Length: 433
Ligand code: NAD
Ligand code: G6P
Ligand code: MN
Image (cartoon, rainbow, N blue to C red):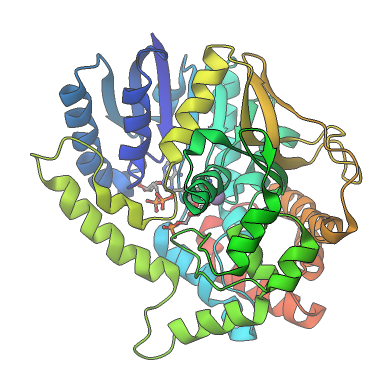
């Protein structure tokens, strides 16, 4: 049987991944799941871990659930390591969301300066985890869910020998939402994806092999909803959509509708407002853990749908099964570019449709991309490359360049203020600086 280590096991998303392993147990013979957390997270791990045990017992599958703070023991001889941890918790996320708003810049946990800050805190930890994997489970696959997922996957790709695939629920979420809009079963929908994590376009939408891209764009123009729980559903400009000719992802609103999104966020932090997303999630999470504590609950509760990470279980466990069973199946993943998109370096990580087998994810060739999208892709990728360097080396100059180059940061003056605020506010989590 297989051994799985889940880093950040106290996450409220854990019932998602447990459900995924239960549903696929017939094809994926998992024997042990080690849920790893840090001492501060133990109270959450105990609650969600107890639920995980009840879920497994109820399903009647023979999976042992282990709750632990011993990361090395959990990683030792693991077949798959998944990462879903958050350094600094939601308090740090709230700072990431609030700091940029002072300068009228987008305050978001993965996009813009907030994503930079989250990356700085995460990089030292992911490198430690990879050290453990290199030493104790050199053949294991790392499935990285920790945000900013594309950028963190690039750190692993560039600086370690660990076999890694990065994963986000946005592509699978878009497939499900398009299926909803078109009122067809989601297995009939196929979308070709190209771009970066949280900056991915559906270049073509097919139903039973027939191109329906324009039909979907028309529905979006008419106001059909296509978003995640964490992103306000601002409507698209129909002329823009039609001339783009591709399906934007929910996160594209932060670029294409920047002022409106910033205004929306600023309104949320006014006196009596609903607060930043982290502050809202704090409330959702309190509710979730109350529900998890109920010892008659034996399955993933519906309330988990209030989080942005819906369908995580499907995405993660079907990917793991495709590797284990050498399925040669299509998955949308974060992997090394290696010439897939012309105009980006070989060693950067992109988000793209790939064939997954036991040797990993093999991207489907994209080639040249339209000038409608390559400017934004290159701009954000330049920011990511500089951020990777800055975060690994603790290099202030590189960090300043990263911040200054980001398409959502208006000037060097603002870049410098943001950077200094971020470094001060996150001091305790930045051993590299
Ligand atoms: P969370 O705040 O609940 O954190 C999960 C757990 O990580 C907590 O129990 C915490 O104690 C633990 N943790 C913190 N530092 C740790 C460390 N050094 N080692 C081990 N565990 C540690 O977070 P969440 O909201 O459940 O999200 C978890 C992660 O998943 C975040 O990074 C988030 O951005 C990411 N996420 C990714 C996607 C995606 O599409 N890729 C979707 C949703 C969430
Ligand atoms: C989205 C994304 C994740 C993101 C999350 C936020 O769907 O794909 O990468 O971190 O959901 O959800 P939350 O409920 O934490 O705001
Ligand atoms: Mn994501």
